[in-house]
Image (cartoon, rainbow, N blue to C red):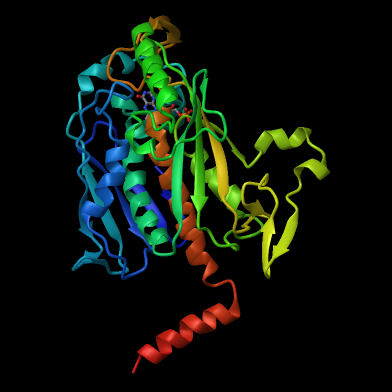
Length: 372
Ligand SMILES: Cc1cc2nc3c(=O)[nH]c(=O)nc-3n(C[C@H](O)[C@H](O)[C@H](O)COP(=O)(O)O)c2cc1C
């Protein structure tokens, strides 16, 4: 199966199926000298874990990451970093009903058409479980970005009909929200909604918003590897994400140029913008402002309500899905959005190091002085 590798210099290859022995990732291209241990990666995985609240699937996975290579005496060595996350709570018998028929909205039908064979147990590679490996790799990328003062925060902007109005975010509350919604009242409402969804055997979608702070101006590689183009690729590669918009996004289409343009002004020799409608990107390159985008998440496809479908041999049938599923993908996907953002930015940071002769000379001269 090709298509499991992402990135150019900071490159990851994920592997593993939902109900296989384990899932994992190989990271190639992480610079040497980054302090790294399993303890540093674990908090990132803990945020994505299932089985921790009524808001998410009841699958009980400890998601304990093991570092198999690429780290020596607590530092990355510049060699491939291999991370392994065992699958400990697999129940393949729960997926027997999916062996012979296709779940509406999931990848069963298209995988079968493409490969002529599919791992029906939890959707195999198309399962949200695959994203544990992305989050583990994203943790390493985030720790690399932290060395440069770059931080990434994603959160739930909307869940079904519940919408967090702009300006009402309480980011201090975010770590305590089981649905990653930074507003105490709305977070409780969202939790109730998910419990209702579960009772009704249905699901809902929502919107995840992501902010990147401390990003320098200059990341992004015109013309085919623009920052917004690469982030779109990264975010839309996550199962269940159906749209992305930067800054004002689609709303820009109904504005006048005089309303949309972010005007510049100088203050004490520094250049600023009076607004950030573009979401921190100009010409596919970061402009040094807050990088802001939103991703649209569809409702979880696997629901308990009866739905029309067909068997693999072409007979009409009705499917009511049992088993452990997320009543909404939104709370689970927040950490995955952060991970894919970190991976994209880490890659672009490394690519940027070669974009100017003077910067390249500094790197060369520093290395030259170190050698004998
Ligand atoms: C973190 C995460 C958790 C998910 N949990 C579920 C789930 O419990 N049940 C389900 O049917 N789909 C779940 N999905 C969504 C499916 O993986 C996704 O809808 C499927 O692969 C089809 O891809 P598409 O929606 O992009 O077309 C999850 C996705 C992610 C990223």
